[in-house]
Image (cartoon, rainbow, N blue to C red):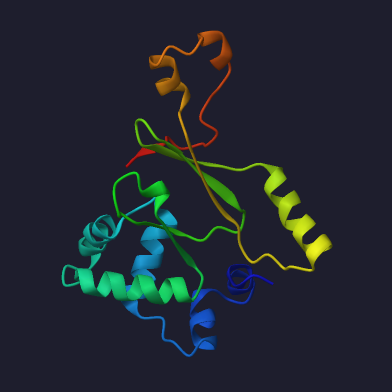
Length: 172
């Protein structure tokens, strides 16, 4: 069973940390809470700015150190989002449902996309290869409908297209 599901079923992050021989410190809880509440992918500087609203003494080193621990616990994912902004990395609380990160190579808009086909791939891997999938991460680069329209793609071919996520896409 993937660790994130196990953590949620067995009493949460504190138990998972304890099982790994780690303490769930105030800073780790704060950083994880910020990522769980975020509507977009956050970089370390954004996490720091948000954390300092609650703990003015927290610093960048503490953020990076605790992000590393949360990644090791497999409750936080680090994303490069196709390196659209150089070597900038982003973070999100790991979600139970697998999703793709779709990034526009022109404007930098990023959104999350889910299709049941992702679960089908995981099931096929298990059935055909005996491979148990813990998580799936897919990053897709291309051009959004707005940028394609600006480049002169026929409006008829874009009819009915929309961003497949309930929150507005972010720009990185």
